[in-house]
Image (tube, rainbow, N blue to C red; front, side, top):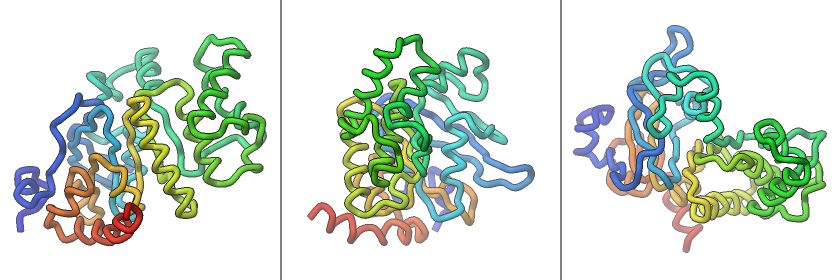
Length: 276
């Protein structure tokens, strides 16, 4: 079987099934990620289109979260580019780069809430730092963001007073504070019970549909990625490059790469049971 790291070969095995519909929102071009001489991933090329729920998937240690860090401006690539619209994230400087980064919102795995601040105060922080809004307007906007994620009435609660699932929702509200075009989620379901994880998946879809926000989700949760992913990239830890791109359900049905199949087929039964 030909190597699916070559797009033309991947097409013959059904492992290159990316949609051509929709405006390109983020383009990763010839990206190599490395720490010194150690290459994490090389030759990554994929397009995230506006309105996608784009899944970054692969086994443990393949570099999923590292890729996200390169896409949100925290890690500089060893080679290649990340384009937000037509702007290069790593070639833009100064105020222009700061404006580009404000088009991105991030919900980290732990939620990363400040424990000494209420939920409303957590959401208000980006508004205080990056806008000229007064205190009353900031409180109104922060309360609105909490309401969008189902936390109306919890504005004055502290993170320790709410469940893990609610903390994740509050983290989403804070990531949305500046009305980003793209929301990134790093292992959003980690540590959640199945019901809370399902509700968070539904929230991601609701926000995408209601706000038109592009979603990028780093996850290895199979039932989740099969349920919500409209596009994806599979990172192969052995070859240190991408082995497939496309909607996870399409890759499950068509991709003949043994590693991609082994990864995705474990989630088929759970995803079918969830939506039965």
